[in-house]
Length: 302
Length: 229
Image 1: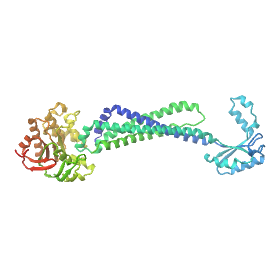
Image 2: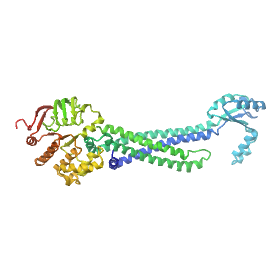
Image 3: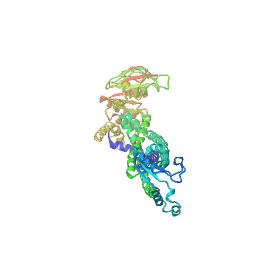
Image 4: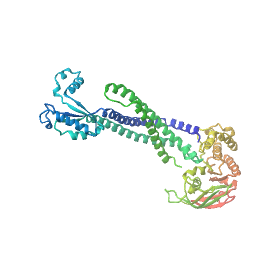
């Protein structure tokens, strides 16, 4: 195999079909950028789950003087009830830790949280806030075990899962990811058709050369490799552009816009972005290589 | 070297066979004219030898290989042992004479060392050593056909197929090409030439196989173009 010969054939082919090659590169770049964004969003959801599930707790609110829940019976939780609930919570195997938050603790947190709104703090006193057990689960998905066991118990007003608050947000992200992947799939289809068409035009415009190559007994590999590599090269260039787009997305959108605005949460890191890039290059090369190969089998027969 | 046994070839779109029960044997080093009117099956005969087409029935042997049973990946090896020349030369217009001949070696993976020694030799054989750097459109028809012969012969094939190689050339130029083919034949290369050119066939006095409507109607050593001549 003479590399120089193959390389010069690739160069000739790419130059002859410059406009088509550009179209292929752009389409591949867009589809891979969307595909990469989809992967990045999934990674973001995972990152946030890791970050938040560590922090979420199940709150078991206890009855206060003013509670209207039927399990309260119109009176505040008794010391005996509180001690029994705490013992049982600690006994559950799914439970990792239990903190008790008294009405005064709740009031302190409240004041801290709403320090910016003194009016609100003025109107709230410790005795209107419920006391609660903050339960940390070993596995945050095991919420129902705690909820089922405690929701109907006397002295318990409500069992609340903080994780549920996050689920809504995650479902939005998941839908975004799905959308990106669907658009990517449509673009991939367009890219495959474009590549296949480009290779066909290339094969047609070089039919004189390939005809002679077949006649003098050049192997299929020799005849098809320049076309195949042409496709793969276009795919790789497209992947390079898509990688650039993804890096720009991380730098300009995530790091400069989102991170300062949403300081309370975690975002995907550079290592996550860098891990996606090889996937993009491999997908680009494979996509272009396969569609070229299939086209060549139909249009450059022995 | 070449053996066809009861070969029939029917193209899918046609009910009449292009070749019907053809049996011909061509020995090593022979020079054979394939004559007959247009559509008599001469081109199909040549295409079968190259495995551009596969026989509908019968067997085709080239260089002791059953061409019909040859797997696809062995076809290039078959074609390397056969050189081809056509009426329309089929040169690459954007390559020089040298590059056109070298192309045939490059695409079968020969080293650049081989190319730079073998190509000048074969250009000298066809008498074009001084025109190596010319482009095909700067050459006369006869010279272009010489380049095509050089390209067909550069890999020293055992068989040279020529499909109406003088069809686009004037009689004087044609004689030059025939002398060249004769010289190649004398190196031991089997030459099969399909032609309409009665004058050439008559003057060469070589074996003649005549096809008519896909059948061999005459096979004569030292023959002439027509019956009457």
